[in-house]
Image (tube, rainbow, N blue to C red; front, side):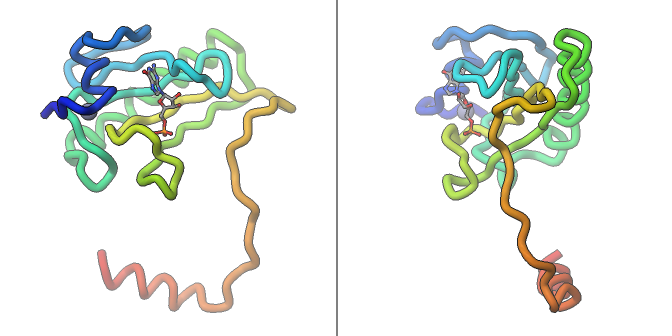
Length: 137
Ligand code: 5GP
Ligand code: ZN
């Protein structure tokens, strides 16, 4: 349940210091050291799992409840206009620490936080795409 080469496992064991805002039996939520905005929190499952493909159903189902708790606290604390909850899997998707974590980021109208993508054209074969994916469910 721990990977000795993992920076977030080292944070969870206390070998590397961090600043926690929440903890329960399964998770610790800490301040991101290079935040996108003031109050940027990352939620770390205590069991090491590299990504969404490895995390247990139990942990993954509980982590959004924690995200809601953190988001609610951030809204009360900073009176932010919005909150991004996001989670990256794989280098191609922007993951840099390979211990699954969920970001909770306060957002304000006209802030400079850059999260997003350019919207594409609507595909003509939406039903084909759906069938492709459904074949693997
Ligand atoms: P990812 O890019 O993998 O989704 O996010 C990794 C996050 O972990 C980044 O936002 C980065 O700032 C944060 N991070 C990396 N190393 C540390 C650390 O040692 N302590 C804390 N608190 N955050 C870290
Ligand atoms: Zn880890």
